[in-house]
Length: 171
Image 1 (spheres, rainbow, N blue to C red):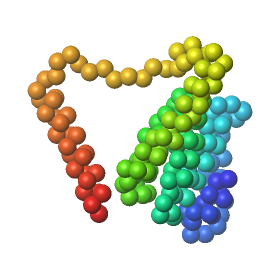
Image 2: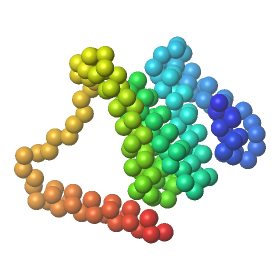
Image 3: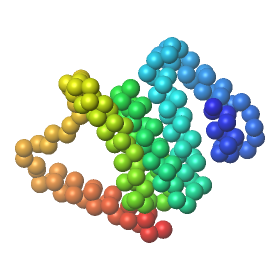
């Protein structure tokens, strides 16, 4: 799979087995990838995500690939909680590979939410919604009082990020 990705998307100048060799060596370092389980399934889902991400750079209208990208990465995050980080990496890679388009980002978010929606519908229909409480809780807690320096620093940082996105979008 790794070699076909490297050949199909022309990641290297010549055809060789170096990507597959590196994949086998690096995956042999992780004992969880030696047996069939959630990390191995997530690994193959992330390979599909890599294929869709690389395929989206060749299309003008890549909404279908970007939706499928989000639809593949969320089951990996549901199976293995540590794969949630790859959701952020996918947004960064999308920002690097494709020009910023709000519509594509919304399509990506819809693709990310669709497996969650399907899972909640299945749990609702089987009357097992209490299983949702087993998931790790994520949240952000804000302090009761913001110091003025922290407030202004946060606003300035947000404006700088917003300006960088605007300048990048103008190019």
